[in-house]
View (cartoon, rainbow, N blue to C red):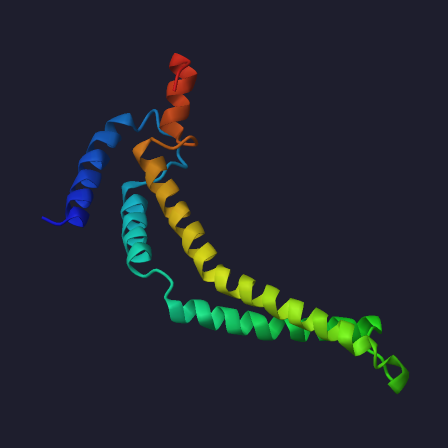
Length: 150
């Protein structure tokens, strides 16, 4: 039996036992079906992590887009010289464009990893709420209120 099937079996057992706690659980609690769907999504997220190619594409697109928006912003603000007397300003503008490219590359490559992390954390939280091990779990809140512990 695979770990995934064993985990699904455990979810089914917990779902049966949780029905006895229906009067304690608040209506907005996570259902067994939602927890199962979260487990499947979590498995898919762990299996399909961002690849190197995705990170490179994100870096390239960020390094292209951010400087372009920076130049548009500079033009709107009137920072781009319109005559030969302002040619010295182009050195500063070039450094700004290079800085924007580096910043855009860093942001673009980090976005897929950040999205992966946040989606994984959200699915884990939903499963923890179902199991009653989350800090925001209705069962845990009820235990705290009743017993004063938790």
